[in-house]
Image 1 (cartoon, rainbow, N blue to C red):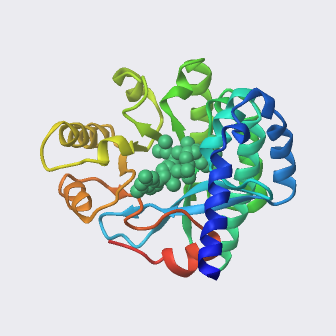
Image 2 (tube, protein in one colour):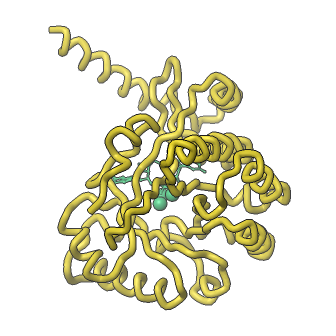
Length: 283
Ligand code: C2E
Ligand code: CA
Ligand code: CA
Ligand code: CA
């Protein structure tokens, strides 16, 4: 009976979360923004980590940082419910800085425990267009002592739409700091190939949409194989997102993909779980 009660409660919570009246996208819920600031102060926001697994059996460890909001009344709010909203208002800049501070500190802590872990952090177009962003990152590198080579920043192709030149300048500055740069959700945006050639990025992440129904042949296979080849020819590493089956891993490894990330290995978990259960995972 206890279990049933729990299930009912959990169910009710998730129903509440999807109650349209509580959806943060609505203008009448602008208050969520104020709450976001408070959430940053009150530790309602947490970093979760999802492993990015090298397919060449290298022993290096990699994880993507994904934010979670544990709201006292609404329960767990997934990032899709507040990140796009924070991007519309520009509040994302503050959020990114909060994430970077936390992630760098976590990285330094793990390093001090002899656990060198490469962390990938998502940043938005607003961050790239903000001239004080790379100085901020530099200052965080100095104050935490994190080696820049352990940090990878993930950007999406849409970051270049508004002001490509400014975005490019930012990327170059970040690269000069020694950070790794990655294009997230590759294949879903509008970037032209000539553009890709000029970007100072070291990694491409193939969007989950192309991995989801991946087979040995067919159009997804064609896209994935040629993206791997294209990226390699440009000197980039390739990550496949949303890997859920062994069969996908086998194909990806056959085709020379460098990393796989997805529920097959682990869902995003908190830092303790990551070290306790996920950190040592490999193919
Ligand atoms: P993303 O950067 O493309 O992150 C990958 C998303 O796919 C994550 O969702 C992850 O949990 C999910 N995922 C990973 N493996 C699988 C899989 O095998 N199957 C399926 N179905 N999904 C998988 P999440 O954590 O809900 O994040 C959603 C998006 O929110 C992220 O997409 C990213 O765009 C944004 N986001 C999350 N954290 C941050 C952050 O700290 N800053 C910024 N700017 N954006 C963030
Ligand atoms: Ca990402
Ligand atoms: Ca992605
Ligand atoms: Ca995505």
